[in-house]
Length: 378
Picture (cartoon, rainbow, N blue to C red):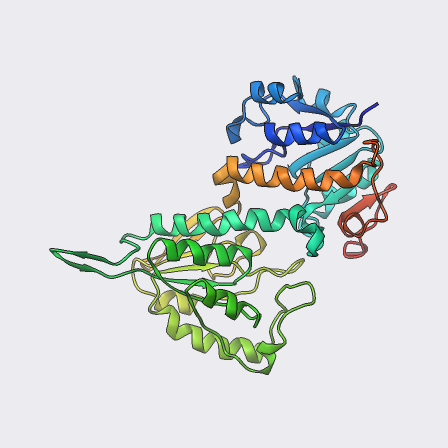
């Protein structure tokens, strides 16, 4: 008998994404799974129940019905207590669990006897790139950050030469050149802005310049060794931060739109822009803080609010991918389809390959306890 995957409506405030699309349902069925979708699960992402039915899914009237017999549960965000209570013992749940920030949910899943995989912990190795949900969602967040910044900025982005005079191009500064930052650079360039970017990882300099932007950083010995083996930024010393802050302070005074994207896994977001630097910026300038959910990169940023400080606006967006729900859901659903291939054997029987390095890295709860080394005793 085929294993059943359940996909339920997201219940966290503001979450419009869904963990399966009609297209991904077809692919999951092709892998040997049965798929049950809670009614209305895809409505906010523009995927109606009828499309899921046409793809071969069963539509359940509520979450409890969808979950009660599910071997595997796909979600975007972590489950609510009533969803955990509805899981059958031994069910496998996969979601963006925010395991460092929301450890109680991981503990509740372990206590319920569920196996839980955090999509945040998919390793950054070549064969797991197609499963990397952090990257797929950050890509869209970087794009959307520029669109939101341009909307808040009261002037045009590209240079315009008109009979009445010339409009200068906006100056956009990207702080943090990961997946979101690179997409922000590319998007701002497409809109005609003059773009500069900074990051503590030396490998990003070439990437920034390849997109037509100018790189800005204090390039000393610490800078040359400021990247982990996993490709993340290391937290820099106080001395380096002071030197970098002095360089950035002068630069920030001239910028129109600043987008910050710097995150350190399991740690508060590094402070990149101080209150003094915000105060030094031109009236009408805009800062978009994509790290606000982990404390923010910008002094004064507030989660899901636009704060005005002395003529400068700071926008703190915690979930920009949800504002492009159809595309974000499609990419996330594809990540899950690629991961699901590790849950079946050659005969399409449900048989998770627990010795696979990808599953070993991503599993956070199994056998009634928390098993991820980064969460034990945290």
